[in-house]
Image 1 (cartoon, one colour):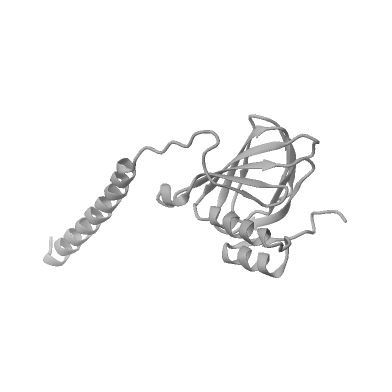
Image 2 (cartoon, rainbow, N blue to C red; image 1 turned 120 degrees about the vertical axis):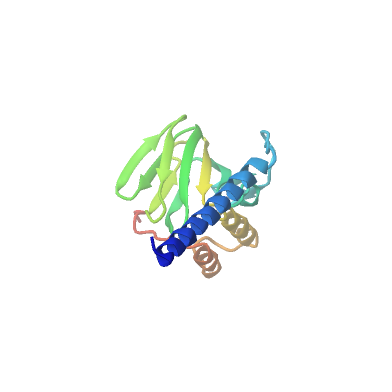
Length: 184
């Protein structure tokens, strides 16, 4: 073997070792994180009209990997159709029934049902009944939970959904709204 070939092998080996150590450091950081327990009724809450947000696990508590919120949904409430460019969402129905549309697929889901809403795919959900519903939502990657904080503060000032300020906040979080799925 020539010196140049050996030098390339050594260089590649060192680069692979550095990458491997970086991954180990990430894994160690995950293992070193402290236990997090959120009991029923704990955590901050926000009101977005017919949709509530109970913050359970924040992104800063998971190294940005995911966040968890619960969404109480009032009877006969529709969450406006929207698309996330950065986040996948996995919902689990805790209470009641919800209607859901993801892309061209529509279904109704009851307690114990999981609903996956991939990033980049338009989706909406609603409570089709006269009883409250509740979803557990895992947001991956974290950060989008802060959108709920900002719009709840905006709505508390009397601003309306879909207004200029709301759309500016949505744009900062790479969320697009559209109402062409909603009949007049």
